Image 1 (tube, rainbow, N blue to C red):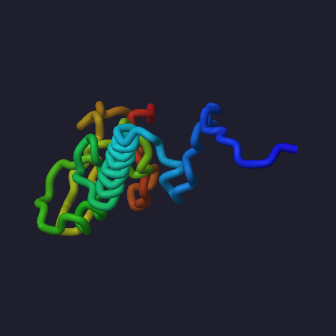
Image 2 (cartoon, rainbow, N blue to C red):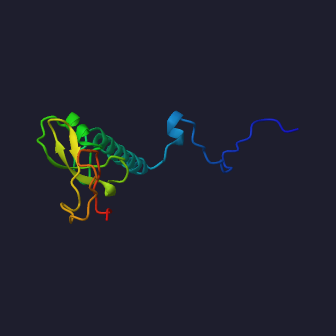
Image 3 (spheres, rainbow, N blue to C red):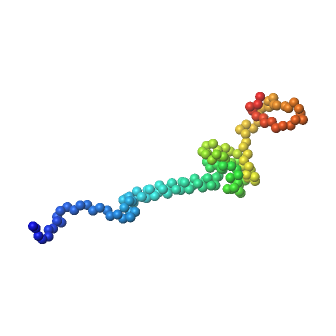
Length: 141
């Protein structure tokens, strides 16, 4: 039986493990990596905020059309009547159309692609006293 104390300090020691330090234990060791992530998140939040603001307050432009002239009037009551861009389905702005907005009433006026059409043999009622609504268009022969 051995008695007394022995000094084992000459033996190699196991590596020290990092102690659990709350949230720091899970964070990246490199602060620059965190700054890059923070910058990316900040950029994404700013972009989303801008998109939401564009929806809440449309400008009536090709890139930021309104849903209707009424929406433009509600957001920008001081604007004057004129040509603006609207996108009634609020989908991709590539299908937006340019319309005349009457800002006094909020009406949207869509102008035809072709201002006039050639007169054809239009329908005439056999009874001149009979008045009924008939819609005319290019497709009539």
